[in-house]
Length: 86
Image (cartoon, rainbow, N blue to C red):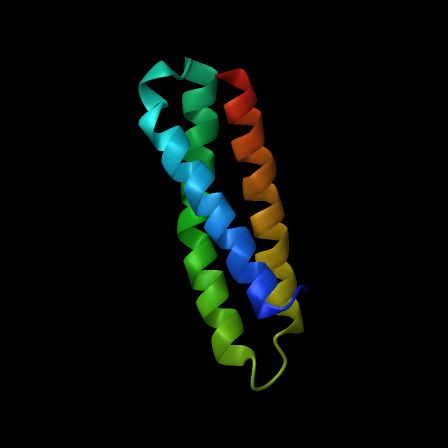
């Protein structure tokens, strides 16, 4: 997993993209609305994963951190797909 500064930067970039897309949500076609709903569920889980990684950092955060990294990557791909469709 990347270090915490890289992760924080990635999450901040995702948040910015998410906020921009949220403003354009009324333009989404139905398939993009479904994609958006799926991504929102994953976004909600991201905070939980990052909290778990932070709590487990003292022990072994490798698995939790890897899961958070995968979720960040998946959210990034999903947001890019929606942004390209707009």
